[in-house]
Image (tube, rainbow, N blue to C red; front, side, top):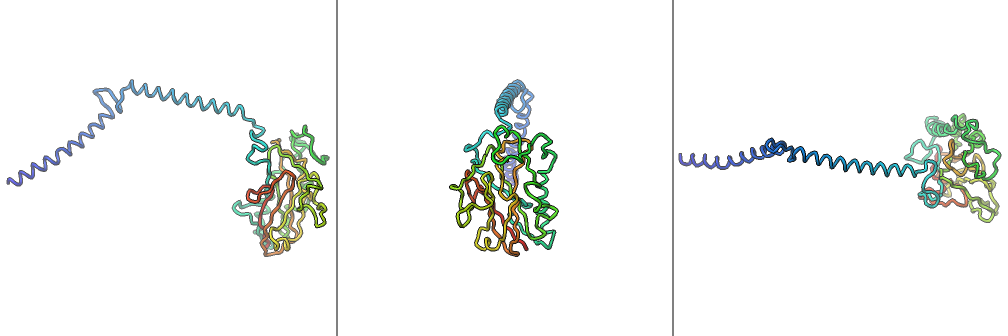
Length: 319
């Protein structure tokens, strides 16, 4: 009996404080949430909460006003017609690059198809056709007033004419060989690849002369190649390896001289379209993978294969 009574006393001593501790914590927490005696919520009176709320209201209002003011100053000083950083200050460093089409899959630069199976080259044909539609909309007419006919311009345009873009007539400039009606040559195993020069604001090409002409634009006797012209950005494509050069076959350019200087500079003119060049590979050897580089030539273009400055690389395979 003594043992049982002692056990009960021990249990009471052990469990009593714990139960009281939990109840006390709950009571303290609910009192913190709302204390009716002191008239506080979360430890603060109504007056204290009003002061805190007013402080943060004024603080965030001033912060938002400062942000809005800085944003207004930024937009007020921003020129919507030209970039703030130009020339050597620009990230592009006045060094244009080349781009090519078709590129239906941006994860690969390989153009591979079987001329006997339309399904293998239809995506390439559709991609080129879709890109050329950008040059055929209602703004691409001289009647629209946004662009002008520069057919009579043989060299640089006069600076006072830079406000309007030159009309790039794809039927005149690109000819009738690389056309959708003939699947841009893919159905015959003679694919056409479209090249465009990336836009750089206010960039003007500098021409070569006979003394500064690079070796790529000279024949074995040192004479200029027929594709070179003083007021054109000459384009030339070639195989990167010896086997590529031997088996790539003839390469034809439309227009033959490249990008005319009259389409430069780009100054964000309404209706401006970058000039284009079609490259046609007339008879590449079937079932061979070709590594191809195309370069555009001007005195003020530097070449960097890693950055793709002044050139573009792609692969071609005709099954």
